Picture 1: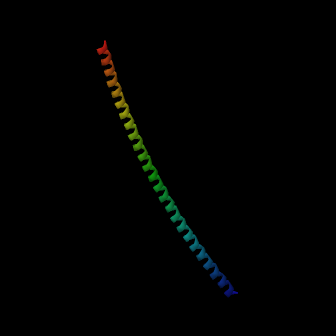
Picture 2: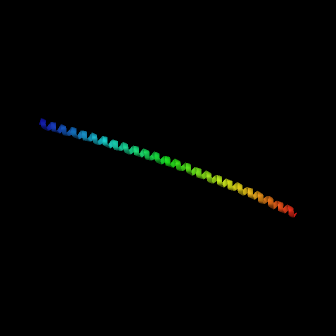
Picture 3: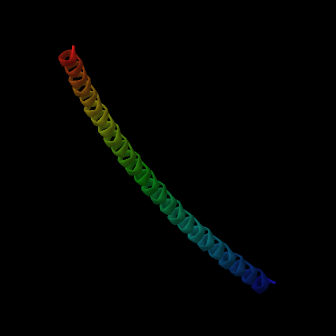
Length: 92
C-alpha cells in the first residue's frame, strides 16, 4: 500500500511539474504574441502618422499652387482690363 501511495505521489508530482511547465510555456508564448502585437500596432501607428504628414504636405502644396495660379490669373485679368481701358481711351 505504501508503494502504491508513493507511486501516486510521484505521478502527481510529475503531473504538477508538467502542468507548471505547460503554464510557463503558454505564458511565454502569450507574452511573445503580446509583444509582437504591440510592435505591430506601433509600426502601424507610425505608418499612419507618416501618411498623414505626407497627405498634409501634398494638400498644402496643392493649395499653394492654386493660390499662385489664382494670383497669376488675377494679374492677367488686371493687365487685360488696363489694356482694354487704354484701347477704349485711345478710341475716344
